[in-house]
Length: 261
Length: 379
Image 1 (cartoon, chains in turn brown, purple):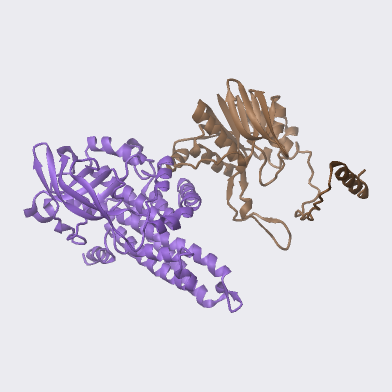
Image 2: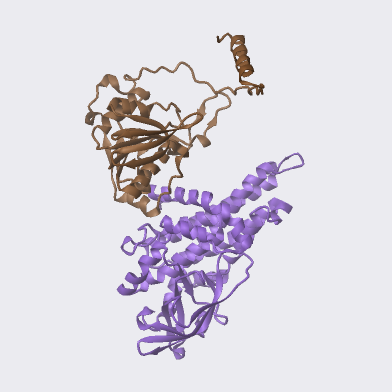
């Protein structure tokens, strides 16, 4: 089984501070880490490798510095690593990013693709499902557990108030939740091997079968109108109506009050 | 001279820091209070292959270097010095002599198990009457056919009772003094070997420190380490290397104490402002941070010397002397900044101060380091 895990290098937002004057993020000096949901996805892939046997390949799109997360992934146990990097890919929104990564994945054998649910620096949760769409394969999001049997994966998908148990035929794509496991540590020898004996393969613009209009800034329809710090929501109101009917009445009244219905 | 760590060394340091912070630190107070061996840490070190960091992959080691290993001892000791002792005694004292003096058969038999952590290693030189003066060995080894018979006892042996192999020193020819000492690899299962009483210590409570007793202990001839009569040289060379490990431990203790103190002085208020706003606190911290950075540079220099040079006794002695004395000084001053709270077990500073003291004593006292350093200075 070939498992490809997509990982992103992100600033450690736990250590990011806001500039009190401008309200923008101060990124200087903030250490970069492997996005936590992606790391959980990698752990899930490595567990499948331990239990069933698999070849785990990691792919990252980013600047040359993103090499670090790929070495880290190899030091944890990944077999192969690809960095998808080119100036032409810069400025990509989620659509251009997923187009580029999907084009790269066409060059790499896969049965199962695992991505993180979302990255802590953007929180869109769009890239994983979009990759599946480009590749024309099924997608199961928000996985908390992944079981593989034959050519079928069974995923415990987190939903707002319940779980869904979803089965899908491989090849397919799964987006992983950070809470699904506790990723293993690297080993010191694994780190030295990752730098001294292993190679991060590079895929650039010329290696991918994509149009210039689909990638980078040109391929990005998203326009950011404004960035602002999230306002805290007010606390909710808790009511304890005696029965379902009065509860429904209460809700309808509030919705009318706000001109929602 | 280049003080920039390589990318792999940087990443390894991040790993050691994460493991220390997430796995070692939460248990440190409990291990100290209950005076119990850090078994969880040993299990973890086995799993993540921390037990043979500087040794070649040929023997099952991680294939890293001395500096990376010392950074591991440093980071682990920041969180728990006793756990640092266990790792350092295993790697620097229990495994190193076999790597450097073992025969091909001995290496093949013991190193894969030691480097994977399946076996825990230990080193037994000190005796009731032979501390700094290691030449006063009373333990005897007599060759009888295909084996040696060992009689005597050792004290203050780190990892005792938990270790599977002990590098033991004994007199094979009393008339030759230092040149009559030989080294042996003794397995815990050898007949006539037993572990005696456990010491009650001031610090590093989690480290198992016991007496070893040899009563007609049978050691196969092939377990003689190095040549007969070369034991003293092996012991001294091993201690040169081990000293760098203790320096790393001492450095870690000082850094750990500083981390705790910096956090504390920002929060603790007296006379209406945090302690950090007082110039006494600022100047104390400035001195301690500077001396600790100097200690780190001496240590890293010694570790790099071990990786690149044949002789590094002087560098190792300087690193140990300075790091140990810095650890004692820094923990004492940090405790003073904590005031009454620092004297309680509610905070880790008193433990760190108790743990620091041993680094001025074991694997060669500070006075021994001064003897070594002055010998080079006056050459």
